[in-house]
Amino acid sequence: MNWSPNQISFLIDGVVFYTYNPAVKNANTWPFDLDQYFLLNIAMGGFAGTIPANFTQASMLIDYIRVYQNTAIDTQAPTNFVASVGTVTGSSVELLMNANDNSGTIAYTISYPGGTTTTVYNPAGVQKSVVIPNLASNTNYTFTIAATDMTGNTVTNSPIVLNATTTFNPQCTGNSTQATEGTFTLGYNYTFQTIGTDVKITFELLDNKVGLVAFLRRQSPFAETQMTNVSGQTFTQTITGQTIGSTISYAVKFAYSGGLSVTNYFSYVVGNNCSLGIENSSMTKQLGYPNPVENILNLQLNDVQNKITLSDVLGKIHYVGMVNANYAFDMSAYESGIYFLKIENSNGIQYLKIIKK
Image (cartoon, rainbow, N blue to C red; front, top):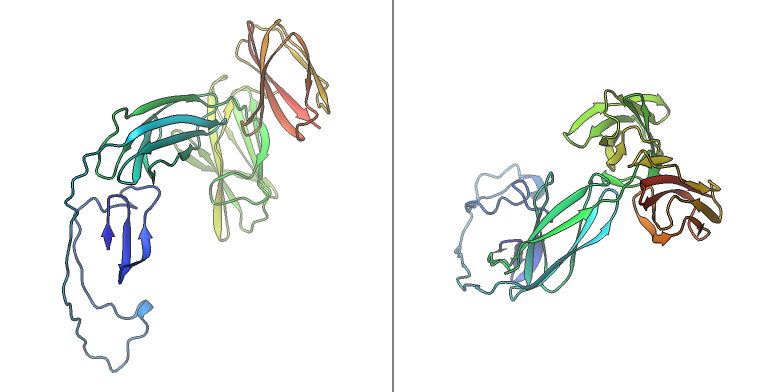
């Protein structure tokens, strides 16, 4: 058994037949930083088969047990440590990391406010991609990344601090197949609707399941409430007494015969109908027509210079550019679906919900 800081390999006659190396190492998956003890016994029954009826006793003969420790001291710290932000969506941030080291393996420890600290291992000199999921939309996050080798030597420029802001994703309505637990095949539909100071949340599971129940999950602080079945596989729950303009984040756990599946967390701005989300409420409404659009979306904007950003319901950005007050936006190449157009100019920020035929 070769026991190293980040994995345990089991060998027979010098040949590795199993390696234990969990991606996330915590008290449950990796208790091997604590004192360990040898336990030698005769295991009988179970996977070893039925114990013979005439069995009375047996001997276990141990030739020897030897323990070796690598006493060679590694004092060489990793070098060329770099980290950057990759793809950013309305609910996730990708972090890209790389470093060199003579030990052959780098440990990257990532932490951020409101999240958990996690350590991932990757071969030295090979870029490692880690996606941080279940983030709130339109929110700035600070990520602190430290790099060490297997002995604990830290690179000189560690830690690296990165900032990323998730894209604005109103999430009023849409559909998805993404899951935080389990899987979805056909996926689910979702709708958020503000009624006064209440928010009605509706989810419909498209996968056909038996014995289906649904639970609404609040992301922070975590809470879970059983939803009401309104028809078929559609469930709803109304949360009361919300503050207009605040951002909430919810997911749904679908439990059924034989398992469960949990949707992504969706962020929603209370009071937003997603056809118009204005950060500066005094600005004059700007237009995009025809809507639904098949080819050309005609924009009538308030400023001579306007920055527009087109994203889909999952927060993926498809276009960013500067345009004038009257602009013909060619959307003929885009797939059919729901998009959100963010307009930024001297008057403020406005969001238009665009339906592409």
